[in-house]
Image 1 (cartoon, helix red, strand yellow):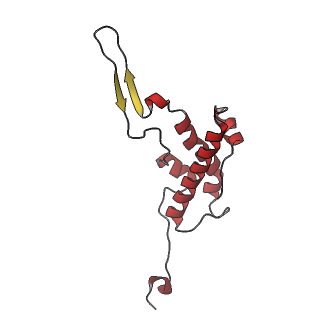
Image 2 (cartoon, rainbow, N blue to C red):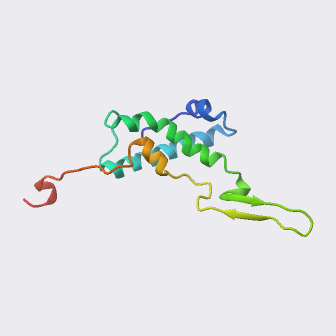
Image 3 (cartoon, rainbow, N blue to C red):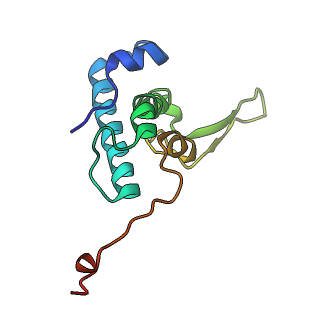
Length: 130
């Protein structure tokens, strides 16, 4: 499987991670996710050189996906807002839908060149017409 970013790539962008084994596992997961996005968009397995935009952006996007996961505090995973108080006023937490999970959003798809529609043509034999 193609790995789009290394621990060194991540460190150059976001600084050293506390657990390098976890970082490498997450970079592998991010690469698998990017490969799936590519295959869903083009209907073909990934080949380096077929999409210049994807090739340029894949390392940065893989690091961005991993950073989103690593920067979510374990006890506050998914929190989008925290309010605290004192005395008779209580604390409240608002949770978003992404609970510290890895996902490819619109911005990442745009960077990868996967945000537009892809034209594919099936020949008659592929459609089962012959």
